[in-house]
Every structure is written in structure tokens, then in C-alpha cells.
Amino acid sequence: MNVEERHHQIVTLARRNGEVNVGKLAAELNVSAETIRRDLRQLEKHGLIRRTHGGAYPVETAKFETDLAIRTTRRVPEKRRIAAVAAGLIGDAETIFIDEGFTPQLIAEALPTDRPLTVVTASLPTAAWLAASTPATVLLLGGRVRGRTQATVDHWAAEMLSGFVIDLAYIGANGISRESGLTTPDPAVADIKAHAVRAARRRVFVGVHTKFGVRTFCKFAEIAEFESLVTDTALPVSEAHRYARLGPQVIRV
Image (cartoon, rainbow, N blue to C red; front, side, top):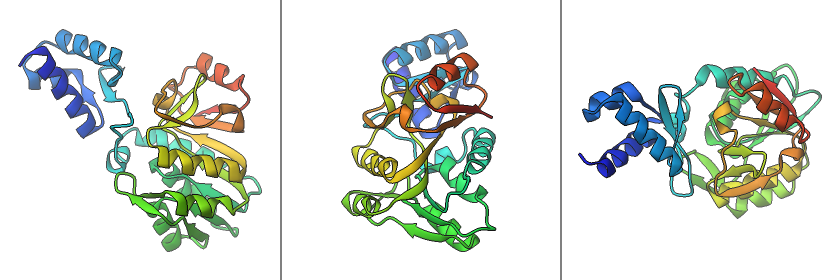
């Protein structure tokens, strides 16, 4: 296996499994750990993966996006902490938008059930769980269903959102950076997120630290539009301060 073939195999495995480990790659590809580390450095330079301690995970682009099944297996403890804290920011909100994705789905599960809530969402799993398990009034946006995320997009969903005034929106993103704001690879998804941001009086971003510093294809919001960014403690304090200077409270949990 030459270098190009090895790089292709590493990216394929990362996209299939959600992440790769240096030791396992070295054993599977029959090369040294140092060779794998060198491969990962080269792949990171080409924007295909991002390295972590002991491994790497795939970078999402306009041509590649991880599916919901993979997201439900990666950094779950961190996502549960983020969701619990984000749900605690509800305040006096009565109407809530919950974005597509696994972390927003966990927020839905952490919402209070002792008060009347109306929840708007594009996520089929979130809508189904809320309708079956809580007394909330659930409004599922209509439209084309994306199989990868099991969420609705396109003009039907956007038109529904444009008619709402929402107290609080919980928004996720594939990337968030100080230079480019909040981004996602798919223009149709970006349009729904942008409509949700415009419809909401308050906005909270939720996402693990690996989202920070990442820029994908479509920008849908500025950081200054959010009152809070909720992430995990692996985001360095110094970096959290830089984001906070743009306006939002940054909460590391």
C-alpha cells in the first residue's frame, strides 16, 4: 500500500467510524505509529481530518457530513453535560426551537416537564421523543427529510419558521469560528438554521469543543447574535475568553 492508498484508507475509516486511533491504524495498515502520525499531519494540512490526542476525526465538508448514528456514539458524556446546562438556561421561555442533531436532542430530553412548553423542531427523532414522553406541544417543520440527520429542510420548513416568534432557540453547528461565525456544510440546512436564528428572541449555541475553530461551507449566523455558547471543558479558557469578547457568555461544563 503506497502513501496515497494509505491516506485514502485512513480518511475512509475516519468517515465510517467517526474517528480513528493511531495504534489501531498502525496495526491495521502494518506501518509504524510514527508513519501514521505523519500521515495524519499531512491529512490535516489538506483539511480532511483534525488530529486529537492519539488519533483524529474527519472534517465535515460540503461533500461529507457525519450521520446521526455516528454522532450518538462520540463524546456522549460531554454532550449530556452540555445539554443539561443548556436546558437550565430556559428561563421564562414558553416557545422553544430545538435544532437538528444529537446534542439538541439531548436538550429536548432535559427540558422541564412541569410547565407548558411549545417546541418547534426540524428533527424527526426529537419531535417523536417529545410527543411520546412529555406534555409539550410539538410542532414539526415540514419539508424534505435528510436521511443523514433525519431532519427537514427546504422552503416548506423555512416558510413555517418565518411565521413564528420564538422565545429561545437552541442551535448547533458543524463549525464555529471567530472569523466566520457559525457554519454548516449544506446550504439547505444553513437556510433553516438562519430562519431559526431570525425568529428567536434569545439564542444559545451548543456544541463540543471540537466544533470551535472549524469553518465549513455555509455561514448562517454571527457569534454576536448568541447570548450563550455552551461547550465542554476541553475548550481552553484562553480561547473561551476570545469568543466571549465577541458578545456571548461562554459556558464550559
